[in-house]
Picture 1: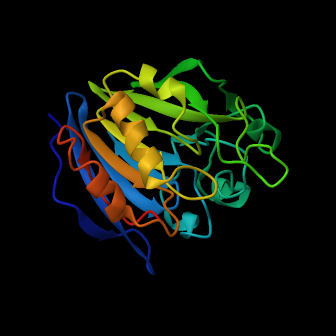
Picture 2: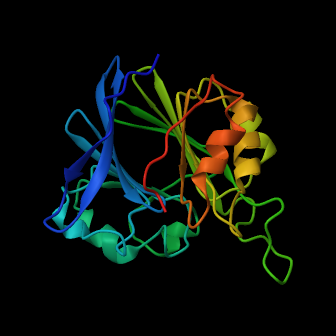
Length: 238
């Protein structure tokens, strides 16, 4: 069972506030801070992990330096080199894709299927791509192999950060996911119906829709109302 505090709003900068949840694990508490879009911050044992930092959402110079930065793909709203520069120092481990590594220096490159260990955190790179949402020229917004989702194992908890993706077949291979972040914004990723289908394919205990744009998140809550095993938590992740 996942134990979480009631969500609260905390001040992380002088001008902005962000929602925050806490997850209890056998390895200690994980704090999740919801910046917005696909940008998240995890804090665990004094270590700070940034997911897809994006400078349009926050003043990253006001945050602690990163121990780990995970970048899902090379699009500028996910790989923001200016934001990364404000939180990176000599000790920061930056994980990204082959294409992402062309825009930053000193990155750890992970391809779909790769696994690495940074401290007490296991990181698995999993596929993230479109199978139905395409550009006008017929090419996918996110081609297969270009982007990563990540599964983090901290203590006994497994956290899936999907990246920009459709409800791809590989999701059904995910095991024992405690917390999932699934994107839900057209035309780039999933509809509420597709997000619900994706969640049912691997049954996370807690689901956060993220990178939601103008999508009505209440639709997802209604669609998963018949699946009480999945707790849908709505945070401000437009």
